[in-house]
Amino acid sequence: MAAPTYPRYKSLLANERLPAAFVDLDALEANARLMLESGGSLPIRVASKSVRSVAMLRHVFSLSDRFQGLLCFSAEEAVFLAGEGFDDLVVAYPTVQEAAVRAVCECVQKGTRISLMIDSPAHIDKLAAIARDYYQPLPVVMDIDMASDFPGLHFGVWRSPVRSKEAVLGLWKLIRQYPQLVLDGVMGYEAQLAGVGDAVPGHAVKNAVIRFLKSLSAPEVFARRAMLVDALRRENAELRFVNAGGTGSLRESITDSSITELAAGSGFYCPTLFDNYRGLRLQAAAFFALEVSRISSPGRVTCLGGGYVASGAAGMEKLPQPYLPFGLSLDSNEGTGEVQTPLRVPSDIKLKVGEPVIFRHAKAGELCERFNELLLVRGTTIEARVPTYRGQGQCFV
Ligand SMILES: Cc1ncc(COP(=O)(O)O)c(C=O)c1O
Image (cartoon, rainbow, N blue to C red):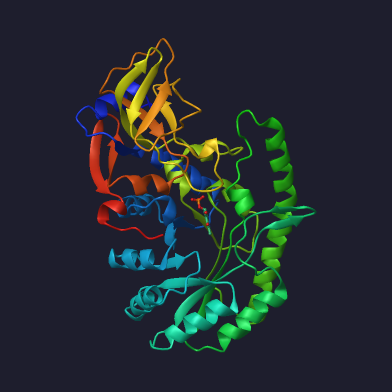
């Protein structure tokens, strides 16, 4: 496998318009193998928000039969992907937007399996009211909360309010009252294990605290998930799947025997935030290149573009990072700018106007919201150019 060197990427990009986004297929495929190995023998539902390119999703599915189904981020996206020929689509985040739900119901009528997320009577009532206009029942998935509440600390995300046996059985009872709905599965995403880095360089104390909290949280939430799934099964819920985990928790999540499948997506591209997990050795696989557009002073260059800041609580770790040539750094006053990104350059690196600087994004799929096209590179060739969702004119949330 060709090493990720500046001369290699520079020569690949020699005739390309910049900014350009590219994916190193060898690295992506190595990441896919590592994710499969980390997931034991379970199938992995691909988190599409972390890929955001139809062609890349197809490529991922071509790599292993254990990549099964999609975890989508919007109902409209699921409909779009159904139109592209994908099946077994679970929309991971609830919505009751009528037009989108109707479009989903129409796909379900035609035989595509799309399931919508619910965590409250409001979701169930609204989805049922729409689904009654269609003869095929609409599959729904129950999102259960996997956060840990420690004294003075909510360790996890704020998503589903469903965390007790009474709550799951209450929703299950309501779903059964509606013949137009069918409970398809359960999703319990342990975000505090899967999405919080615990090997961040320069943060030894914080890393130790996070690892300690993770070690307390994992057994508690795994036991809760098993208990809630068991309670549903005892009340005759026929669950097609119990989904859990994410790239950062594959090895831990498989220790919970109540789950039947994993979810993961970020690991394919491995953005910078996924460098920071203990025991997860993914390779950077998705990049973007900016041109050096001026030399502002000795020891500095300025690139055109670059302000592709990742979502979540704002912090320096959400900024893209210069990657190649090694040793460049952002200017802390300016970060990555709306149209220009100044960089500090060590004295042994000579960059000229027009040459590329290679960056990595902090998160996976969000990179694709900034580019119409991904160049797929392998070794010394550009094997293909494929559109992102944006390149297909799609923008969902
Ligand atoms: C419900 C759910 N499952 C799984 C994931 C994991 O995705 P990834 O592997 O891209 O981190 C996420 C990410 O936010 C999620 O929201």
